[in-house]
Image (cartoon, rainbow, N blue to C red; front, side):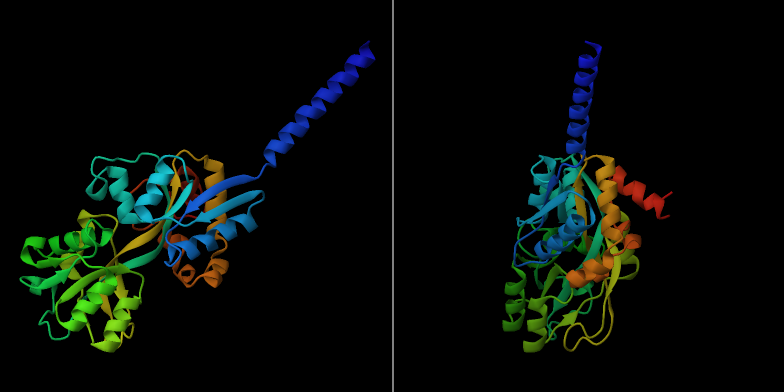
Length: 319
């Protein structure tokens, strides 16, 4: 009887052990919400997912095409995705329930880190007579699609110069429409938030010429002090035909968002894998060359996930 009991106990222990191993080795399936297939977020997100899938055992992350920032944050908040590439300003609106998220505060979102700058490029026609945002009064200016992140960027930057949309003849046009309107003379200038160079502005520069308007000095500092998600940057001379000098500008940052409810160990492991394989990321996508751990902790106004904090502390970027 004792021998039979001993055998039964051994079998039970083996079953429990195998079950535990099976659970430990189970593949982890996650969704990384990105953007449209024709944009930057989708292929860039695919490059991040590939690093996680190849560097972390039993990891399976799928980069999913979406409507980008606002949709991604909603997907994460309700548990339909674990990660997302988003603009850090839109993430701020979502976390605080302001602007385009007025009355809709999302609490289940956290930050892994910022990735690369998306520059607020302010372009005007060469014969517009505009040399500064102060010169916008009475001018025909497109501020991006209605309700878009670009429109809020334009509003906030103009605030730094003491101007509002009431001071301009405002249009809500896409990037392509804005460039075409400047070319045909029905628009004086536009705001475009995107990586540099932007295709619409490149085409405008070649076809009709453009002038880039700087954002710097006390005015830029005022905007950055009020809105913590802006960072100072420079549009290098030569980015666009005829624009040979460096132009100071403000940028928001593409950001890697994560579900706040995801466990600390998993997020730590994924943060570490990403930032220890940046060369591979840069080889997979040009924007990867602009990513670094040091810059990932800048331009952040939504709390970091504890797993990301653990990694940044480990490499001396946080106390």
